[in-house]
Image (cartoon, rainbow, N blue to C red; front, side):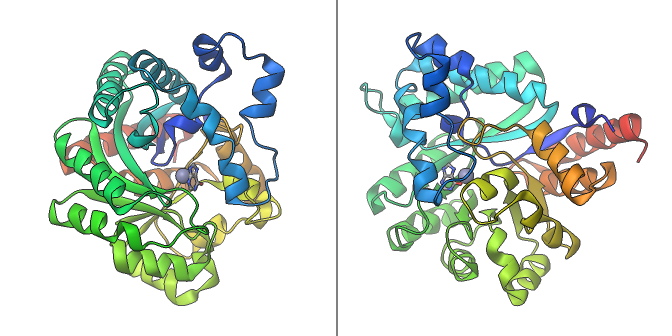
Length: 333
Ligand code: HPA
Ligand code: ZN
C-alpha cells in the first residue's frame, strides 16, 4: 500500500519541536549538519520526558522574531504537504517567544497570519492550539488561555498544557482551564505520558478536556479505558515519541494497537518532528509493519481525529467527505 498517498489528519505536533534542518540553517547559517544532529534531535532512547524536553530549547531560540516565526510556520506546512496532510492542528507556547521583545499578542498574531497564508498557499486546512506549560505560574497559564479568547474566530482554536508532567502538579493551571470552560474554548491536555493512569483521571477531573495528549498509559487501568470510550475522550497518540521517552521499550510494545482495538477514539501524530526525527509517513509505515494496520484502520483513526478536531461541524463534514473520497480512490476501502 502506498501510505504517502493516504490523506492524514494530525492533531498533535509542536511547532517549536518541528523545525527542518533547512529552516534551522535559513535562520542560523552557522549550524552544521553534525551540530543539528547532536543538538536538535534526541537519541532514539531518552531517559524520560524531562531528558527529551532538554532538546526543545534549541528550537525556541530560533523563533524569537516575527520573520523567524513566519519561516518556521511555512517550513512546517512543507513537511505537512510531504505527508499528504488534509488537516493539522499545530501547537506552541506563546510565552516562550518573548526573548527579543515581542509581546505575547505579537507572537500569536505572527503565527496566526503565517498560518492563514500557508493554508491558502497549500490547501492544507489547519488550526492553532496555544499551550501553557506545567512549570508556568497561574498568571502565565491565565495569560495564555486569554490569548485564545482574544484570537477567537481566527486560526487559533484551542488550549493545551504541555511540559514536564512528572515534575509539576496541576494546581497552578486549574483556573486557566476553568476560564476555558466558561468561555467555551476547546481544550486538550498532555497526560498519561510521564505519569500513569492517575494523571489522566486527575486531568479529566480538574481540566475537563475533550482530548488527551498521549494518554497512552490509560491502558494500565481498565476502568479508565472504559471511561474514555464511554465519554468519547480522544487520545492524540504519538507512537515513536512515546518509545523515545522510554514509556515502551520498542514500537511493538506500544499500547496504541490495544487501545484502538478496545474502541478508544485515537489519532496518529508526530508530537516533535525534529526531536523525534519522524514524520507521519514514517509513523504509518511503522504501524503497518508492527501491527499490520491497513488502510481501513488508518481511515478509522483519521475519521475519529476529524470528529475530535477543534473546528465547526460544517468544516468537519466537508473534510470527512474529502477523506472518504481519498481512501476510496487510493486504497479501495
Ligand atoms: N510532552 C510534554 N511536553 C511536550 C512534549 C511532550 O511529549 N513534546 C513537546 N513538548
Ligand atoms: Zn506533545
